[in-house]
Structure formats: structure tokens, C-alpha cells
Length: 323
Ligand SMILES: [Fe+2]
Picture (cartoon, rainbow, N blue to C red):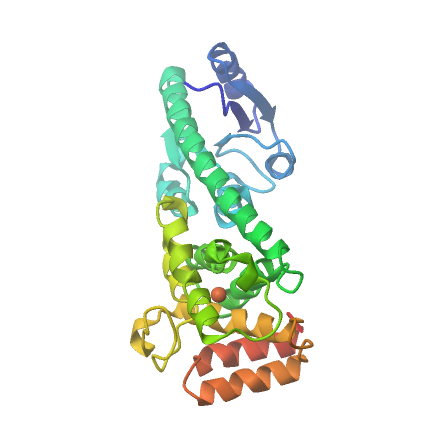
């Protein structure tokens, strides 16, 4: 197995079991850390030196093993952290609850140490692959920020759109999976601008028709850059279609209402809102009220989804998000 990742955190109230595993794991090159408290588990996995795998016993309390797993699996910041549960035979009826909590594996006590070692090594191999995908995603995010840095007026745009889109998705009750796609789509929607010549990208003022035709290629370029990367595949429609309009006058595909998914409509609204609220070479930032007014006039023209804008307006006004 690869020389990394190797850090295993074991959380168990009674340390007798973990002591037994510790020597076997250590003999096989794993770096084992023990804790007997649920809060410490949370502190360690959120620290600057988190484990690569978490092994928890059902006995753990404050919070419980199930609560910890739910927190891990609903926190995108933790990435792919595999979590294994060891369940006592008398609690077997809770296995369904454990599956619902999202454990990557559930083993019934007593567990053969060698069987457990095999499961740990297998999940760590998957972790290596997932970390590799995360690295590739981070490179794309870095590319986006590099591209934005060429133009003082667009700096931070992708981060803001990602943040706004996730806030809006949450307020609309979307799933964690959809929120993750919104985060990626917000970050990467304009990545194709990296293939647009600087002379056009940084041009002050309004584009000529020819320049605009070149600029209109950026969603296609973005799609080409990202489509080979499996971990961002869900965000491809958001990258390719973030300039589509419900009446079919957008680009690059001229999609109409029914063909434009909800997640794309969310990026539409948050992308335009941020552009309106930001300074450009040809305009000062508009106020929150003026930006919403312009967006509503564009809903009237048949460009954006009025339901999505209504939700965004509520969020902006009620909570001062992006206000
Ligand atoms: Fe764009």
C-alpha cells in the first residue's frame, strides 16, 4: 500500500479494544491515535492534522458515534473521511440507524483484527483516490483565481458566486449533493475564460460583436477543461449553461426553460447579482435595491427564473446576505 495516508483515529470509551488493534495497525505502518471522548474526536478531525480514517465504537458518548458520523458526512469541509463503526452484538437492531448515518463500514464485535485491518487498508486506498481528486479540483480552483486576478474587477467573483449559490440552495431545501454541485459550479463557472485572450478579457468598456463572439466561447472552453475530471462532472451543466436564458436567447446552446435545470438557474441569478453589485471598468457597483430591480426587469423579459429570484431576494433582504 502507498506510504500515505496512514493516520487512523480510534474513538472508544473503553480503550481495551483499541489497545488490541493499536499494535497490529502500528506493525502495518499505520499511525494510530486513541481517544475516549466524542468531543475530542470532533476536535481532532477538525484540527490542522486530521486523521485519514476514523474508527469509532458504539460505546462512544458526547457526542455518540452515530452523531459524529452524521456530522462528518454532512460537512463538506471534511472531504472524504472514511468512518467505520464497531457495533456490539446486542445493539445489532441499530444497524439500520448506523447505515442511515452514513458509516462506510459496520463491523459486529468481536471483530477479527486482521479482517478489520483489511477493511481499514481498503478504505485508505479509496481515500488516496479521493484525495487525488480533491487535489485536481484544487488546481482548477487555483486556475480560476489566477484568471480572475488578471482583472481587478472580477477578483473574488467565483468565491462569492459559490457562496451565494450554496446559501440560496440551502434556503430552498436542496440536498447536500446539490449544494456540493452548486459550490463547484459557482467556483468553476467562468474557468473557461482562461482560454480567452487577455486583450479581450481585460478590455475596458463594451465588447465589439467579434470580441463578444470570442467571449461567448468561455462556457464551452470551461466544459472542455473540466469534463475529464470525474469529481466535478456534476457541475458541467452549470459551467456550460450559466449564460443560458429561459427564453432561449442565451448561449452557447440556446436552451429554453424546461431544458435549464434548477441548479443552473440558481447560478444564473447569483452570477448576475454579483456582477451587478461589483465595480466594472464601465460602471460603479449598483446598490442591492437597484441590482434586484434590474434582475426583476430581466425576469419580465423572460431571462431568469422568478421563483429563484424571489427566494434570493428574501435571503438578501432578510439576512443581508450579499447585501
Ligand atoms: Fe460567464
